[in-house]
Image (cartoon, rainbow, N blue to C red; front, side, top):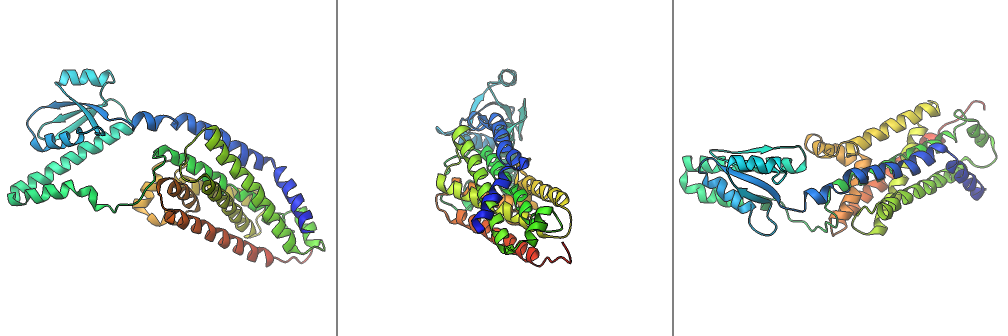
Length: 375
C-alpha cells in the first residue's frame, strides 16, 4: 500500500504545472539573468590596483604616508599618478583614473561614476581623514603619545580574530546564486502545502477520499511527504547542476556537500509548507498566498533582491539572520566556500535539520488532531 501511494504521489507532483514552472524552469531563467548581470563584474573591478590621480594642494605628511602605504608592493590597493588638477581631470574623463584624490589640509575625492570601486575609494579617503584627525589630536594634547597612537592605528586590522579560510571563490556576487538556490529550496513549501491540504477532507475531494479509505492516514501522509521530498530533491539537483556545470558558477568547497546542503534545504522548504498547510481551516488557495508571501519576505531578508540587506540586519537586528531559514541556507553555501574547516558549515546544517524536524513534527500534530463530523 505504501509504495502504491508513493508512486501516485510522485506522479501527481510532477504533473503540477506550478511545480515544473517555479521550481524547475524559473531558477534556470533567473540564474541565467544573474550570470549575465554579475558574471564578470568581480573580475573586472576587483583583481587589479585601482588607478587614481593624486593632486597635492598643500603639504600633508600624514596623508602622504598613508598614500605611500597603499601604493607600495605588487598587491597595492592603489595605482597612483601624482599630477596637477588639469591632467587629473583629463585622466578621470578618459577613464584612465577611477577618481581624483586631493591632498591638502584634508583628503577629498572626486569620482565620475557610481559603483563598487568609487565606494572603495570613498572608504579609503574617509579612513585617511579619520587617521589624520586622531594623529593631529594626539599631537595637540600629548605629543609623547603619538608613537603609540600610530602603532595602534597600524595594528587596527589585527584586532580581528584570525580564522582559517579557503576562499575558493571570493566573488561577492556569488551570494546572489546562493540565495537563488535558497529560494528554490524554500519555494518547495508549495509541495509541502499540497501534502497537507490533500490529506484534509475539508480541503479537497482527494482529501475526503483518503480520509474515508481503509488505509491508515499515516501511510498516506508519510508517502506524500516522501514523494514531495523526492520531487524537491530533483529540482534542487537540477538547479545546482545547471548553475555549476552550465553557467559555470564557482561555488567553491566540496561539490558533494553542496548537493547535500541543497537537498536538505529542499526538505526544509517542504516541511515549512507542510506546517503552514496544517494550520487553520483556510482554503488551499489562501494558504498558498501566505506561503508564497512568507517565502518571498524570507528571501528578501536573505539578500536575493537587495544584496546588502543581510549586512544591514546584522547591524540593526542580528537575530533576524540567525532565525531566518533562507539566510541559514544561504550561509551554509557561504561557509562551505569560504572556510577550510567545516565547523561553521555543520552548524548551519544543524540549523536546517532542526527546522525540518520542528516544522514536520508541528505539521503532523496539527494534521492528526483534525477530525470531521461528516465527510
